[in-house]
Length: 266
Image (cartoon, rainbow, N blue to C red; front, side):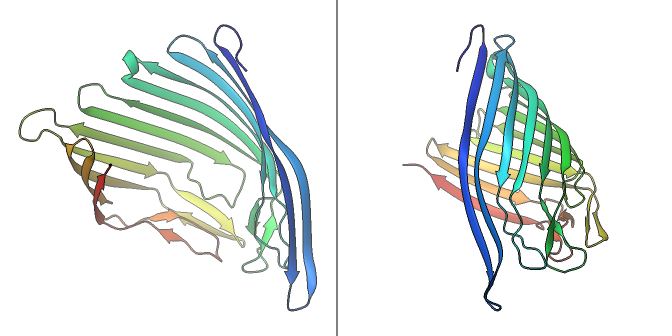
């Protein structure tokens, strides 16, 4: 729905019909039955403060089935909750600079957490809140130069959530405009995160913060052909990309690697 003077309202939702039965075939018994019929609404409101700047807010509910099981073999109930976001976005200098920032609040329950008494089993977490902030800016200050940066902050009550509190990404790309290197481009990027940890099975698992750098060289001889060389983890840093439960293990990040990609459109 569109209102007057730049005010826009969006309403929507989905109707979820979810039925699940879990059986222990060895014992020939049903360990859990879940049947849910639920309307999951969402609403959004935006206002064009100026021709360049828009403020917005949104509300949505959460209904997410999950496959994890308890020690008795019963399937956990779906995750349910709600989320609110408030933010703003803008486009400046004729679109050469775009920026967006938002704060969010999320409350959910039933999220699967490791059972401290049974390896490989899970329990449903109680109600927990997560709050955060996200921002992003991208622009082209000069011909051939493209820059972007994003930052996020997450604070959660969930001890089983391995998300780092702080995360920063940056990227830069330069396309040569003339001379013998015309149509060649070079770029680079960085992702840096703060330390993270989870509590699983009564054990605290920690991962140090890290920064990873990537590089790119490309050539576009014609409009429909692109040749790119990607180099990931340029300095071959060893780091833990994601901590996980004691039952599932911890994931290390990808070491130094390179990939050549040729893409064409017809």
